[in-house]
Amino acid sequence: NAGVTQTPKFQVLKTGQSMTLQCAQDMNHEYMSWYRQDPGMGLRLIHYSVGAGITDQGEVPNGYNVSRSTTEDFPLRLLSAAPSQTSVYFCASSYEGLPNTEAFFGQGTRLTVV
Amino acid sequence: AQSVTQLDSQVPVFEEAPVELRCNYSSSVSVYLFWYVQYPNQGLQLLLKYLSGSTLVESINGFEAEFNKSQTSFHLRKPSVHISDTAEYFCAVFRTAGNKLTFGGGTRVLVKP
Image (cartoon, rainbow over all chains, first blue to last red; front, side, top):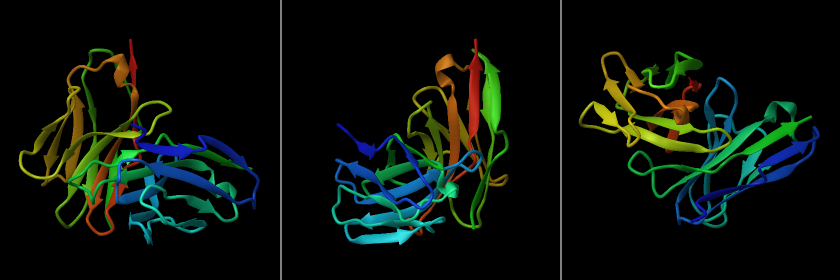
């Protein structure tokens, strides 16, 4: 079972470039989320989705867009990359809302903006 | 707003010694508490969680955590660590609005032989 798959694993961008981080899950999970991980700050929620066609903002949404056209995919778009967006990004999914079900995390995308 | 504080950013410990990772949270409502582990170059994995009932919860690999409502703490312990326990550990609090987990800053455990 693939679980939660994130691509790419590593990416270097120049300031101002745009890109899309991909996240796919094959567990038929309704809930999907994007987090960024920065040293000493744990993980912070960027955007989340409770089902296809439904998205909402988390704690740190500025500079990022998401869409959820299918249950399986939840891409994260950086519109104009900035050095402050250098981070490790994690996608997570769960069958239904926490806390009763487990959230599964991808292996992360390490992004560097120069 | 909820916050989660992990008091130690790094904990070096010798193999077979005990370890305690401290976690305190702030919340005025009922909480659900989690510990996640992140092994090097991997994503997060659920270690254990407290939802209700017994305040002492255990994982399959020997970790345990105790929910202390009066002290708003959820400290993680293991009586004897292995080299393979080297990882970063995150405490998290769940709030029902928006299915959101709030994470602490993480504690990096380095087990030395």
